[in-house]
Amino acid sequence: MNKEFLVESMSHGAYAIATDSESGKKIFVENACPGDVLDLEIYDERKDFSFAHISEVLTESDLREEDPKCKLHKICGSCQWQHVKYDEQLNFKKKNLIDLLKQNQVDLSLVGDLDGNVSITGLDEPWHYRNKVIYPVSSVKSTGRVLAGYYKRKSNELINIKYCPIQYSIFDEIIDRLKELCTEYTISDPLMRHMLLRASHDQSEVLISFIVRGKLLDKKQRAAIRTIFEKIYSEYEQIKVCTLNINDDSTNVILGPETELIVGERDFIYDQIKNVTVKISTSSFFQINNKQFCNILNAFEGHTENIKPHKVLDAYAGLGSISLNLAKDLPETQFYAFEINSSAVTDALENIKENNLTNLNFMEASAEEYFQSHDKEFDLIILNPPRKGCTNKVLDALMRRKELKDILYLSCNPATLARDIKYLEKKSNFRVQSIKAFDMFPHSFHLETLVKLTR
Ligand SMILES: C[S@@+](CC[C@H](N)C(=O)[O-])C[C@H]1O[C@@H](n2cnc3c(N)ncnc32)[C@H](O)[C@@H]1O
Image 1 (tube, rainbow, N blue to C red):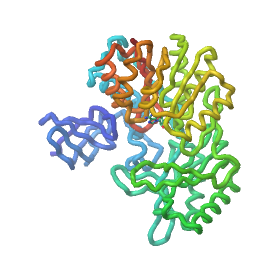
Image 2: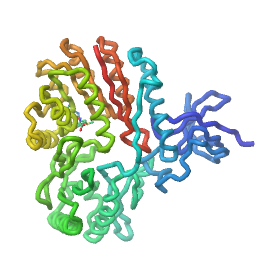
Image 3: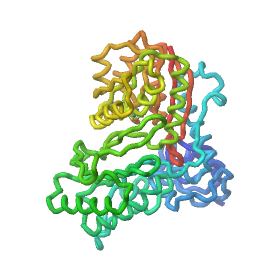
Image 4: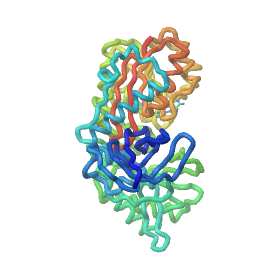
C-alpha cells in the first residue's frame, strides 16, 4: 500500500511542507497544497529533511485553486503558488512572516497580539500587476526562431512564453511581435541576453530595451536592432522609448552600466505614483506593482502623520518614489535621500523638478559611504534596501545616531528583514512597534513588509 503524506504548510519558497510521520523529517514538495494527502517519491534525501515529487494526489485539499490561470504554473520559475487559492496564499505568507520573526527571536512584545495586529494587504484583482518584464532570449537551432520567456524552475531551459497572467497584458502582444522581428533580423543569443519591457500603470507608455553583449555587437547587428526598434515603434503608439543596454559582465546581474537611446524622443517613460509624476529610465529601480505600492505609500503616510518628523532620510531611495510622495504631503518637513545607482539619481533629480518640490534633497551615495560621511540629524530614517538587506556597517551607523527616534524598514525579503531587526535589537534599544505586510507579488512566495522600529 502507498504511504500517505499530509501536506501541512507552505514554505517561504517554492515548496509545500509535509512531515514523515515515522521519521519526523520534513519533506519539501513542489506544486503541493496544504491539506493535500499525497503519495510521494523522494528524490533527494538529506540528514534533516528531504525533497519529493508528487506521485499521486490521494485527496485534494480544499485550499487548492480549482482553475489556475496559467497553464505553465507547475513548471515556470516565476509563480510558485498559483495552485493555492489567493486568500490562502495571504494567510500562509502572513504565517511564514510571523514564524520567521519568531525563529529569529525578534522581540514582538510591543506589537501585542500577532494574529490581530500584524496585517497583510492583498489585491482585489491579483492579476496583470507586473509593470516590468525581463525575459532571457534564446533561439531554436534548426530554424532560428527566436524564443523569450522565463526559465523552468531549477533549470536553464527557457519556456517560450506567449501569455503571462501576472504581467501587464500589453506586454504579450509586443513581445510576440519582437520575437518575430528578431527572428527575421537574426538577433538572438549569444548577442542578445535579455529583452526588458516596462510600462506605465495605464499602459499608455512603454519602454523596450535589448540587453546585449557589447563584445559581440557589430555594425550590421546594430543596424538590424535599429530597424527592429523603428518598426515596432511605428506599430505601437504606446512605445515611447527603445534602448540598447550593453552588458559584458559574466555574472547574473542583468543590466550593464551603459544604456543608449536608439529610437524615441526621450530615454524614459512617465508614470504616476499616487500624487506624483515620475520619470523612469531603463535601469532605474521602480516598484513592480503600482497598485500595491500605493497601499504601502498610504501606510508610510499613516506613520509620518503620527510621528510628525521634522527631518526624514530616505535611504536606498531608487528614483524617489517614497520620498517624492511624502515630501509632497508634508511640505513643512525636510527630506533627504540617497541612492547608489546614478541613473536612478538622475531620474530622481528630474522628478523633484517635475513635481516642484523644494523640501527634498537627493544625492548619489552608497549607504555605507553616506553614513560614514554625513552627520545630519534625522528623527526618522526610511530603509528600503535590496533583497540582501542592510550591511552591519549601516546598521551600526544607525544605532550610533542618538537623535534618531524611529526607523521605517520596508523590505522585500522577510529573511534579511528578520536578521537585520535582530541585529538592531541586540545592539541597541530599537524595538519593533508595528508590522504591516503587503502582497506585492501575488502567486509567488515573495512578500513586502513594512516594519516600524522605535526607541
Ligand atoms: C528595493 S529598491 C528601493 C528603491 C526605492 N525605495 C523605491 O521604493 O523605489 C533598493 C534600491 O537600493 C539601491 N541600492 C542597492 N545597494 C545600495 C547601497 N549599498 N547603497 C545605496 N543604495 C543601494 C538600489 O539601486 C535600489 O534602487
